[in-house]
Amino acid sequence: MDDLKFGKRNKRGDWTPSEPLKTGPLFELPFRTLAVLQWVKGYFFPWNLLFMASACVFWFCLTPSWETMKTLSWEWIALLTVRNLVAVFLFYGAFELRLYVQRRQGNRFKFNGKFPGDVKSDVFFFGNQNIDNMIRGLGTGVPIWTTYEVLILWAFANGYVPMADLSTNAWWLAGIVVLLPMFHELHFYLVHRAIHIPILYKYVHSVHHNSINPSPWSSLSMHPVEHLLYFSGTLIHLVIYSHPLLAIYHLHFAGFGAVVGHVGFDKIETSDESAIDTHAFAHYLHHRYFEVNYADGGIPFDRWFGTWHDGTPEGDRLMNERWEKKRARVNAGQTESNT
Image (cartoon, rainbow, N blue to C red; front, side):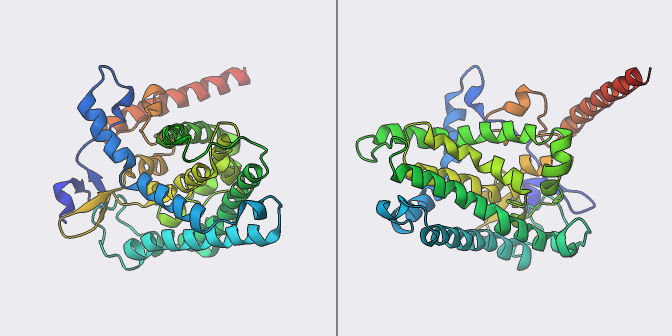
C-alpha cells in the first residue's frame, strides 16, 4: 500500500496520518447516530472480537475444572502461567516478527521511522530495547496477570462471589461485555494519571516510558508496581454479578490489547490494497510527548481535562501552551518558597 495516500512522512522518516485524531462520538452532543454506529463497528471489530474469541478458547479448553481450582495448588497455577506465557510469546512475537524482524511493511505507516532494534541505549538491559521489554513483560507482567486470574478463578470456584449463569443471564453478561472496554479505559486513565505524579513517574512509570519508540514488546514493559495497578481493574469481577469467562476476556483485553497501542504502526497491511487499523497513534503520541493522551480517546477524558493531542500542529501549539503555563506555575511556586 502507498502510505502517502493516508499521511505524510518528514525528513527523519516519521509518518503521520493526514486526518487529525478524533475522540469517540458517544458522549458528544448533539447525538450523531451514523457517527456512533461507525464508531461502534471499530469498537468491536477486529480487536475486541478477537480478545473475546481468545477468552472463550482459554475458558472452555485451557482452564482447569471447578474442583481443581477450589484449592490453590502449584500444579494448576503453573499450568495457567505457562499457558499465558506461551500465548503472550506467540501473540506479541507474531507482530514483532512480521513488522520488526522481517520488516514486511518496511516503514510504511510507521510513526517513528527508526526501528528500536537498530538503536542501543544504556537505559535498557544489555542496551537493547527488545530484550529489556521481553524480560520485563514475560518476567513480571505475565506472572502478575496470572496472579489476578488465579485469585479471581479461585474465588469463583469456591463461591466466595456470586456468579451469573452464561445461559440464563446472557443479556446481562452481554451488557457487561459491551461496557468492559469503557470501564478498562476509565480505570486505565485514572491509574495512568496517578503514575504520572512525579514521585511515581520517577520510580515506577519511567520504566515504561524508556520505550519512546514503542514496539510490540513494549506493551507490558513496566515496573512490577505498574503491572499490579494496570491489571487491578479486573478485580471488578469480584464485585459485580459477572462470570469467569468475562474476567478472562478483561485480562485479554488488557494484556493482549496492550499490543495494539504499542505496535508502532497506524495500519497493519493484509494485502497490497487492504490493511487493519490499529488506532495506535493516540498512545504513540503519549510515548512521544509524555503528558498528552493519557487515555485512548474512546471516552474523551483527555479532551475534557485538557490533555488531548490530535497529532496536528494545532495540537502541538496547545500542548506547548500547557507546558508554558505549568512551567510558570512551578517557577512561581519556587520563587514563593525562596522568599
